[in-house]
Image 1: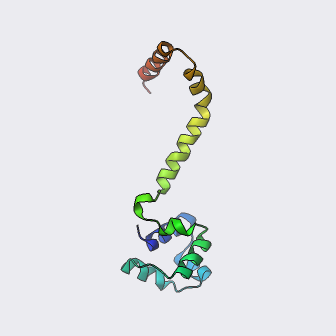
Image 2 (image 1 turned 180 degrees about the vertical axis):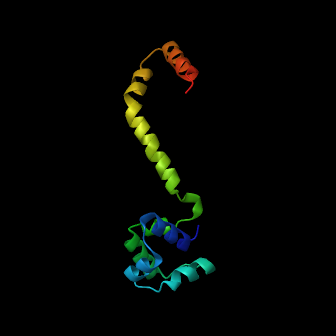
Image 3 (image 1 turned 45 degrees about the horizontal axis):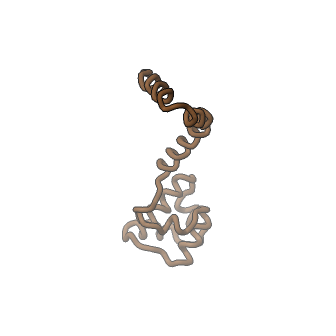
Length: 114
């Protein structure tokens, strides 16, 4: 995903229009359209102003797709953290049980159909 695609995605996520971003970061609203069409990179000072307005680290807007984390990934991580917090005490108890008991409990859990 290009810099401008990430900017546009972040604007949608935060409910900021292109015009609002352009005014706040002091650039022409046409710059976004041009950047998207040309897959271009803005000047460093403009990229920094945009990141400040969006309250996103500049690195997040500049990083390559391979290391980018999507909003869905972040949401999934938060859900898993909630589950872990909720069931951590049970997991810790399982860690101290004999393997046969753990296997029996897991077998019962696996057999439950929801």
